[in-house]
Length: 307
Image (cartoon, rainbow, N blue to C red):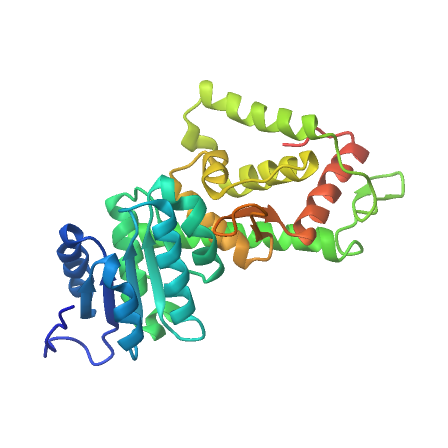
């Protein structure tokens, strides 16, 4: 471990950062963090993680590059970092490969970490910029960068979706559906679950569009993941993080960002694997499942084709 010397050019509130990565990747990450205004406390390999955490008094940012080594090693690193950062203001950025998603992502999602998987340069830069941004600016400054604007729009859209679904499940009176001229009032809380094949056919129809139009034209990862998890719930099967990322039909880093946002919104939750306790799956919360049930029941009552 090598501590960085203080840099007089750093701003007074420069976040103290730690890089945990293979030696070949340490310099790249440290350089990116320093360029964003962070002070590097240490850059170490995964094997030195325990020694670092046992002597680390404070840090505002930990960057874990878990793209090297067996998946369970990445999961163990993630759990130790989450345990250390729990209850503190320390932010975590984790770079994961597809093989380590199912093991390492669930505890990091629970902890609100920023997850990247095969990120584009823009995704990587946006994650670094957000993590090193002063707290006051994170709350009040809307930058003009196109990537920041895109992320803001994504967050606003998923918040809107979460609010609509939450209203369906929690307050049937506010979400009543009326049929004009007939005095019909729907009760979203009523209705049975649809047949799993109906949900799966909807998913297949959505993917069929990709054969005729550019996939990005209809990108809707939040709804695609809600449908996939709802179908899995009806079928009694479990869904891994990597499988859910595939269902989202967007780049993995984008899918992980949406998984984290929907988890924070109370629509997704972590489900431990009953056989391998080091792994976990993602499922709908009961509130989200009730909202999906209400949605399908409402479309059936109105004679609509769910989209």
